[in-house]
Image 1 (cartoon, one colour):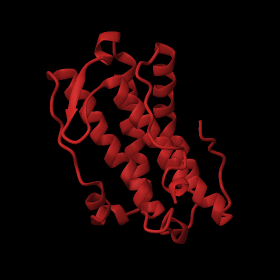
Image 2: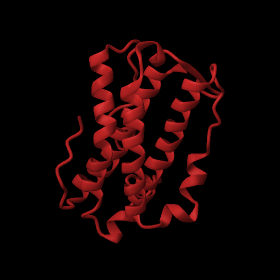
Image 3: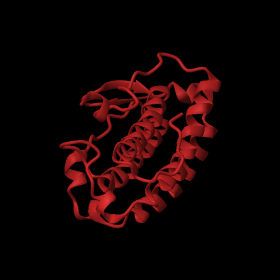
Image 4: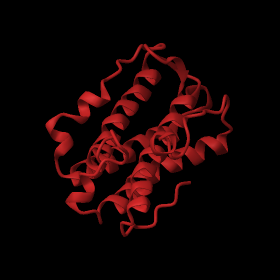
Amino acid sequence: MESLQYPVGRFDPLPVLAPAERAALVDEIEALPARLAAVVQPLSESQLNTPYRPGGWTVRQVVHHVPDSHLNAYVRFKLALTESEPTIKPYDQDAWSRLPDAESDVDLSLILLAALHRRWVILLRSLTEPQWQRRLVHPKSGTMDLDRLLQLYAWHGRHHLAHITSLAARSGWQQQSAPLT
């Protein structure tokens, strides 16, 4: 079950990022919308409504979850850049996954994700070295700097893309190429 829940492994951040590592993670965030669209758009309604693991979300819910989560990430970056160690508000991702919009057409979330990531990448590429060390406080996870947050959301995209691609592989679905970098 662990490999179904964490197909790319659990989040394990590096304590310090070199500029090249940071740039590669930003590139990964930039590429996610196109990679997710390539994997999801060929799927049938039945496939979109298939849970990626027993007891897990459907592919459709996963697709809608990614922009929900990354919208929060974008706001968290902006808060950390404009406030002194802000405490961010967590959200109940499972409750969000049960709201009616999580059953809508996945193209809506793919469009939202593409636009969001374009803005987010502009912001990420503009950050100076000291800005990467800015911090925020998550009430459950504690204090973290933007380097850690960057690693988390690059992992998050890989994590959910792998949920879908591994389900497709296990199920024998015709799948577009989307290597897990």
